[in-house]
Length: 498
Image (cartoon, rainbow, N blue to C red; front, top):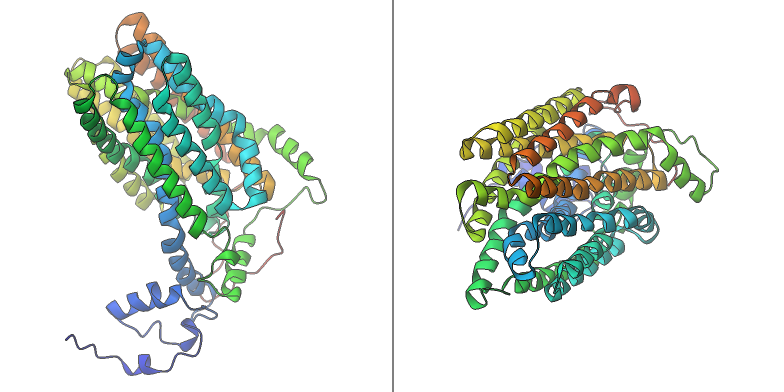
């Protein structure tokens, strides 16, 4: 039996509030971990020694472990359902008789469905709540993924991809909006980083999962085995949607593991950094129109479009680029394509650590996009396939590491329904690049018989993104600065545009 000697201070009776008992700072090592990450999850934290800063940190640690796993899983499966088409491209082309241009067109139709329904979906999320609407999105796109197994020609594949985009519309901006309801601006870096980490995880493990399933089902049916991959992954997605519907709280006040006082405190902290509402008394529809016409909305949208055009073109064709360069099979190309995403995962962690306390996020964005552009140019013009693979890997690392920093720019402009519309608009226009990129890449490949021209064109898009983001300081409002210490209480401001 393990004997734990409990310090005298810890033996004080608990009186209804973990931090109010006064022993948080005195509990050492493992005991401190258990108290903060265990007991704090089930007891109201109504006071905290050291002021609101420490209280907020303790509460957000609890919040993080309660909701961010949902965020990671939701983002993971959304990217998995996008990434599987890249792995399945070769057997689908063979089964349906598709050219590279036709495949790129069908793959890109996903983003048109996404764009058309993105804004209505995010507005609906503000009306029906994150839990119900995000669950609806996940369950419906899981069903469409499973039904993709029934397609018989390129038209039907394109239709399935369009419907997949329509049903998935609103997920990514909805998750970002969901995070802003729990974490104020200065506390959003870590949640947004984990949100983005799900992307390389999906392509890394998704490549392994999809390639493994493909290998299994092709051994049973060499021509049509790819269809069962869609069935299995669609079924898993629907199950996850039901879990989200059952357990995810939409706001702090819906969380059963937070007291009313703690929920009020977190909500007040978020509202304390909301930008000034300059449209008080304006109706919802007019707010939407104002957001759509705003120059900041279009600036962010075009920048995101340029970055995603290059990103999705390389992503969708990565297994085929590897296959053409190294002469590997579709299954082995899928396994090899997991390697770049391993480096992407660690690059996101590295950049987050380096920028955690930095006030120069715009400079980092410029550097990361420029690095990606140069890396793609190298990959396009070198004759060594392994150096080209390194270039593609560096480019993916740059774009993905920049994403959490770019998300942070979006959360400083509007609040309420206007914030929801801005996030949806930026994501919508940005994801048009997911259509444009593969189309351009596929056309260039068919026209030249090589991947090099398409890669070179994508490097230009990323260079333009670097140039445009350099003007962010002149276009966007500044990031809120930390004005309180841990011994001070943040002034609570009234709700704005809630």
